[in-house]
Length: 478
Image (tube, rainbow, N blue to C red):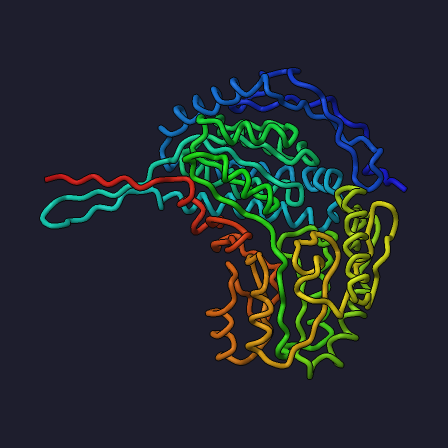
């Protein structure tokens, strides 16, 4: 059943944004965007680029860079704060659009707006990192400065259609780069909305070019771009890096995040609720969703029933209702894929503790599975679905080694009061971030964020993001 919010009239097909302007008009082909909760409610339409548009996309990226690189740090900070102001002014409409396009529960969409505003303001405060450093070395005057790397190509996913775009857009503005955004085919309308707000804020060096994923390869191969920043699946990301030539590349890829519960550092009910939310919010379609749960054997009898209870209490259904935790997945194909993962695990000897079935054709119920092995796809792959596996352990060294038996290394969580175990886990776990007494489904946008192994290359985050969009130049005077 659709709600009134879902069935509002769709707007006319939206054109590309090239160099801050919609002047490109009705070129390309219109592509309908449907609400994923029923796959028939039209949300809007966006004009998609094709191969014939590559030349003008390249030209505008280069022109935009040549113009914007001359701006002062003060001007860039002002643009970022202007954009933050506009995001705040449009937060209700944008949150609703995110939910319509992606099926994300409305409270999570609203939270995404709050984070996006903070990221813009954070980068505005950090633009001074691009100032020069002066020093004397061997009797010579030396100046070390950061310069914008050039035109940026950003390819973004559907699950955070605003904030993950902002994490590429904001450092590009702060560094003095132009940017061309190729949003996910499922969620182009949010990116186009953001592009218009950025242009209004004074950033004309932006292009937003919806297109099928097949166009991505041609843009990645283009010599017009100096940098590729990609967020998405590991297979696609590493392939794009292999064809990117001599570009600077940042990859924010997937994971199968683990949480280790070695101590009950808080009441068992609240700990279980935290883990359940980390595993199943937004139907698990978050790269740092809790996917693997490891419980110290002595804690199993207390924590496992609480975890099942917390999972049962999660609200599945209409994402436009404020009490919904789990809405539809991005497509019916993803629901079918999720069911296949569970079915294959059961054939291999796993056991469903809770869930395992669908709420409806577009929505999957949260699912807890035990009796799994690291080799099962349900553990080894990034499930990107409301599935979490539960295993117990006795030896701390062993569980650390088990967590590391993965191609991924994005984030992990550890519940313990033992400072020695904290340090051991920090030194041992092959991940980009370790959360102590918290779930791995936590990202603090100020801090460096990224993974190792198949989970990525480079780092995003306000404190380190600009490093990926600049290069260092040294001036030495005799």
